[in-house]
Length: 341
Image 1 (spheres, one colour):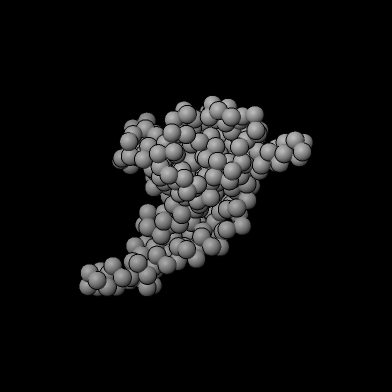
Image 2: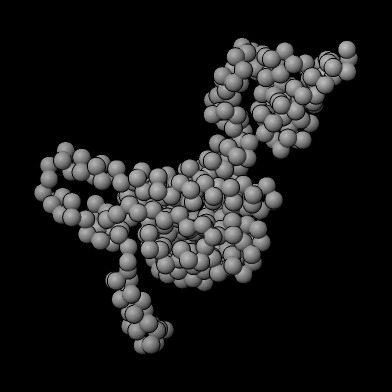
């Protein structure tokens, strides 16, 4: 018995362990297709693991509707000034951190929109934080900055992680919306959330090794969720990233290439407009699209400075969505032409 822990505490812990022994989750079942995996040739071993991964996409296809609803909830949350929070432990927590931090270089989005919380903090990204995931109070502490109207997403392969449950406690108390991403179709936490994304990836190649199929499915769900959310919030034009931060020469070249791809206008002109727009890709793109389509942004706006200002204003009035801003400017230009006749 550990120091400072009573026998009753120890017994309670033992009862919790016994409860996990009977956990109802396909990920904890023994995979009948891989019982002889340790005697296979290396090629057959690799092939078997790859074949098992085929279950992942089937599992993701089964949650599309709930995932789409969760995306819409995230868009509503962020548009209203709220944030999306990921909570998870171990591999699930690391996947949440990975997804959130990649939004900054890709879409210029930081913790003002997405924040990831992992049981054990930053150190747990690199080494296991033993026991932290079993403490609901840790989740409650990490959820201290959750506010009414936020969206709290728990990521838990088992669907029962106490750390995530603690975060949900705070979300419920403060009126935040909730979602769960789990690889257990019988997830214990599912009944208490608004959106339950329950992936059935089946037994793992190695029994209970949820860093494999379960984690791969979670990664795909998170990629889809955050990317779809960014698209709906106007962070892309067509399939092009239009909020990349030009922090180095490579990224600046990528931005100019993006403008060329979107408009068909030669690189030198694209770079010149980008400079006039103070590096704002959306503004530069809107100016270039109007130029390509011979839409002068109102006849009176003759200078580049005026055109940039007009584009910036149109984007502001259109929620930052390029297509909407262009439609607005086209309509205004048409109206000006009619009035001038």
